[in-house]
Length: 332
Image (cartoon, rainbow, N blue to C red):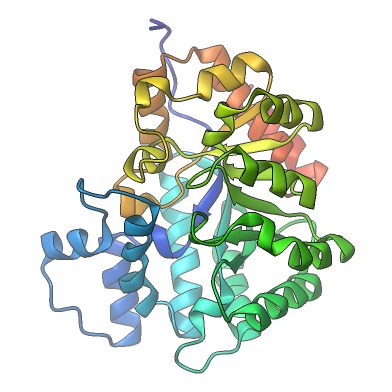
């Protein structure tokens, strides 16, 4: 392990889910502004919002989203949540963040997807940190119309910075194969919307290959691509950015043995790896802790940490002016 002394940040978080980032403190604030009664004490609330150590799979992990989603069904709740999550990320040393969410999951109490997006933008514009939004389409059955509407709205709201900048595909990857969404993402590609896809997390390298063939320029997780050298070479050749999330990958059993976590192997190959939180509240982490974890588990050097930062700048869904500002921050 390197004995190099690391500084705290700056950090970039390209893969953070809004509903998975609702900490107990944020949950109480959201409940207060919406007059929602939360009957639990702080310990119980943390347990409600966090995955247990007994988590066996991604499907178990996904169950933890149900409670925070109940706090994200009004314009006020969504706006305040985006603002508070970004503020907490900034306090942890994050200098640029991309928050992702599925508008269709926030329509249970009558909001339209468009109203959900507008509320999220209001919260984003109140925050001080460089930040953008990614709209998630969801894996599943019977939600094809919702996903198409999400794509249409991404097209309507698409900007280069300080707003909606990309689309994602999230959800139960092992149950709903990436390959099944080729038609949807052909539409995304036709509209010229940048996109990332969760792949190689709960399914194997074939999922990553499908995402790349569909036109994804970033891959969420991608840890199981390690089982196919041809896919790894494809990732490198195309300059695909991997949004790796170490604590999440351990908790969902995406990687059974973290001593074999492929982050350093990917770096050594020249693959554009980044480190992110995924769902900081569910995992009881933040971006600073993620880097502490990989320093300990993977023994990354300061030079490798800088490479992770620059990879994140290169892969960010933002304009060149913002990227140049972010590159300068690490030199200070």
